Length: 116
Image (cartoon, rainbow, N blue to C red; front, side):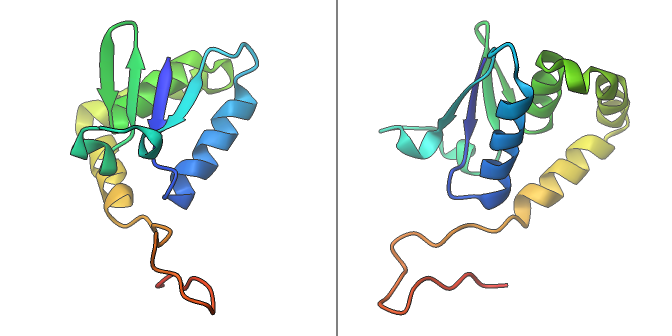
């Protein structure tokens, strides 16, 4: 499973570090899509996971990752119910829309300022 995360997003990068620590069997491989020469623009809005010829995006990617990590197996039924009632996608999309991005090429001699 390859997880394509946004390295410009602090939440995304932090989540990737946590998942990597939980992945004792080393089944997950992490790649910032920002390091790719060409990537779908949609990757800037949603987490993307590629596993066994299938793509998972957004909340579905969270569920796919949870299925691979034994420590998160108990959360899969809850995540699935939240998906079924529409709350999972709603919460994911709300968080994704309001996440903070590190400014790129916008720093001056005084350093980078992140807007709050």
